[in-house]
Structures are given as C-alpha cells and as structure tokens.
Image (cartoon, rainbow, N blue to C red; front, side, top):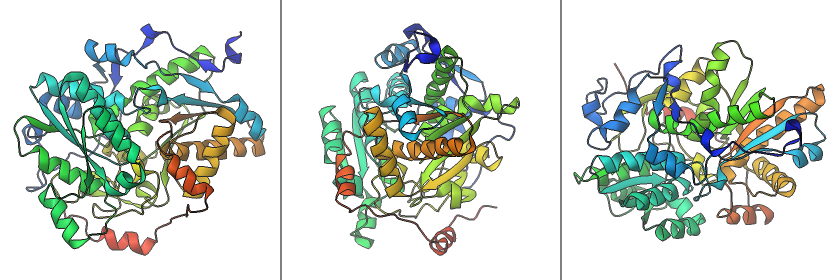
Amino acid sequence: MRREELTKIILPEEKIPKFWYNVQADMPNPPAPGLHPRTKKPLTPEDLTPIFPMSLIEQEVSTERYIEIPQAVREIYQQWRPSPLFRARRLEKALDTPCRIYYKYEGVSPVGSHKLNSAVPQVYFNKLDGIKRLTTETGAGQWGTALSLASKMFGLQCIVYMVRVSFQQKPYRRVFMETYGAECIPSPSEKTEIGRKILREYPDTPGTLGIAISEAIEDAVQCAETNYALGSVLNHVCLHQSIIGQEVKLQLEMVDDYPDVVIGCCGGGSNFGGIAFPFIPDKLKGNKVRLIAVEPAACPSLTQGKFAYDYCDVAGLTPLLKMYTLGSNFTPAGIHAGGLRYHGGSPLLSQLYHDGFIEAKAVKQKGIFEAAILFAQTEGIVPAPESAHAIKVALDEALEGKKAGVARSIVFNLSGHGHLDLTAYENYFAGKTKDVVISEQEIQDNLKNLPVIG
C-alpha cells in the first residue's frame, strides 16, 4: 500500500520520543512568574516542596528545550505508545470534503485517555522522592483513573477528590479508580475544612475542579509522606503531554503530509498543549499552521475570560498564576464534559494565546454531541464528551474547506474514548441535553473577585 493510502499510521516502537519538548524554551514572551498565595512575591522552588518533588519543580521552571524521559517511564509508555494516528476516510466521505482529516487516538491507553502520559512520570518522580501517598482532583474522572493506575504501578496510595456532579453522572469512573486501588471521594466533602465550609454555605453545589483542588492540597499538606499531583494546567504536565504532538509530526512525515490546522479540546490545557505545543517552533519559523483550542460555551475561559493573576483553586492554597480565567470562584453548569469545567487555563497556553500563536473557539453542548455521533457512526469510536469538542471544530473546518474548495490537512487530538460516558449520550438521545451559555454580566460579576496584585 502506498503511504498516502494508509488509514492507520503506526510509528515503530523504537520511535517513541526519548525527550519531552518544553515550549518554554521557544516562547518569545515567557509566562509571568507564579506568585506565593500569601506574600504575592515570586515563587521560589522551596515554596513548592510541601506538595511536589524537586524533580517536578525543576521541570516546572526549566527553559531547556528537551528534557529526557527516564527509561523506566519509557518502558511503561511502550504499553500504549506510540499511539496510532488515523486518517478519517469514512468521515471525509460522509462530509464530502476535499480535506484530509486525521485524529491522534489517545484512547488506546489502559485508562482510555491521554492522562496516563503525565500520571506515570509524576508518580515515578514522587516515588524517587520517598513519597508514599498522593492526593489529586478529577473532573470527568480520566485524570483520577490515570493517577490511580500509575500509583498502583509504583506502590503508592492514591486519594482522588472527584467533582460531585461528575461523581454522580459517571459512577463507573469511581469503580474504575477503586479497581486500581484508589479511594474516590465526591467533592466538596466532609473530609476537609474547605469542603465542610462550602457544604455549609452551598449544600447543593455541583462542585468544581477549583474546590476539588483545594481539598486535595489541604489533604496533602497534612502529612510529610503525602504529595499532591495535578492533571493539567501546570508546565510540567504540558511538558509530559508533548509526546503526543511529537509523535504526530513523525507520523505525518510517514504519509508526506503536514497540517494546516491542529485542534484539541481545552479545559486546563494538557491535551491541547500536548498536541499543539510541538508545532510552536514551526510557527515561529513562519509556518502558517493554525492551532485551535476548543472550550465549552458553558466555561469559556479563553474566549471570554480575563488575562490576569488568579488562584488555581477556591481556597487560595495554590500559587497565583497569570492565565485566562473566569475567576476561581466560578461554578460552571454541570455539563457532561466534566474535564473541561475549569475556570482557568495553563499559563503557557494563556501566554501563547495572548501573543496570537493560538486560536480559541467556544462550542455548545448539543453541537458537540451531534459531531460525536457522526464521528462514532463513521469512524466507529465513541468519543469522550471532552474530545467531541475537538471533533466539532474539525468538522467545521472540513466543511469550510469544502465550501472554499480548499483541501486542508486537519489533525485533532481524540484524547479519550467515551465508553464510561454513555449516560451523557443517553441524556442527549432523550432530549435532556441543553445548550448552556453564560452571560457577560455573570462573567464580569465573578471577575470582580480576582485578587489584587501590586
């Protein structure tokens, strides 16, 4: 078969990248420094040692272009990496588009999503530091599942605070985590001071990632042998996920193609950054590739948020990061894309968006399920609701190419499957799915509460 006729593009196993790519090395404007939550002064590495191992802190602040992937991590990666890049030929035919559509399928990992790419190295570096127990938050449950498995691989205990609305919508995610030996707790909970406070004030709250982060950090700082692990937003998480985009570039070379458009869904920024950041050096050299981050209209931090310093959590326990934010107290509607219900974006992503290297689009719930169903019926994979945001914009780009008579090359990150999200599809088929759009007034009211810096 000729290379241009391939449908499944597989890299040889020996081509698994040996280094993570660090976009900080190439950014014309580096992200603003994180600030201490109490003093408001720039963070020092020592400020982060109560919850992170020094090896991850070093990755967080590094400006080295490439950081070596430990051999022990690469050996585990081999279970699902390199992940396949598919040419969506049946989808192209259904759309009657001249565009070439590719998707990088991260759902082949044991946990069904890209999250294991960062969970494994995070647990590995914590293990080397003598940590016995990890706490974390999770929205849809994909990150919590990934950290649960990675923790079991290295013999660590794992405690997951899962956003309450997702805990209720996705019971099998909890079972998934418990199968790997983790404890999964609906957030806000009675187990932490911040959880009890929020439940007293807002007993019916659906919960947020910001609340779950606060609970996980409060839990972690109580014990010297416990650290906290974050599944998105931070620099070292985006670093680990860069393996996705590096593989995509190699796979497209195998079929003599290069993308006009690269698309990923976006909550905190891990899977979008993972596929998009390795293309930033090309843009800096004058390449016209477009990088599009897709977020829910119910939580439009990039398209409607403010570029400002804010906390990553509700309680103000985290450092202040400069990012596009809707305010750390923002409580999004309980949409089914729980992994995208986050008030802010990665500082790396936010700076690149602010500087014009990245585009952002917000889409509504009904449209993403329509796109997901067409994709499932043509390509056979039922996507996670989060990933369906990327599919929606990929379809839009393909149809715009058809209208303009332009044969674009479109690549999107299918960051996970939706096998444990079938309740969301059931609700859509039953007519229960509603489009949620927040008002500009609601956003501005919430942004009034941003911390005052300087």
